[in-house]
Length: 95
Image 1 (cartoon, rainbow, N blue to C red):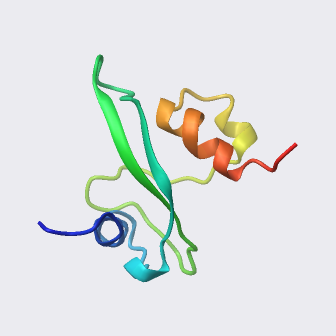
Image 2: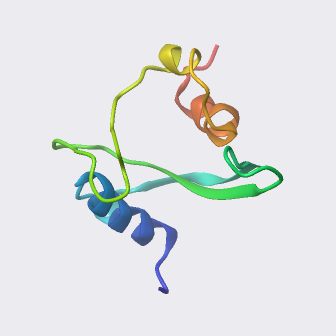
């Protein structure tokens, strides 16, 4: 489609959870590679951004459910390697 990663994320957030975040408000955190969670032998490459949500969100389109989890709750659930290896360290406070 010729979109940048930020434009794609902005559009997907609007379509999937009803969040309106302009691409220029997304803060890039890096591009990360990890094994895909549900496809054996596949590798995922993801551009990761930080965003501030200011309004309500709701599951839409391809999303069945939305819920907020703390980092402690995530430790008790099966979570994709991209999240455990790269994203959680971005939100954990330094020791």
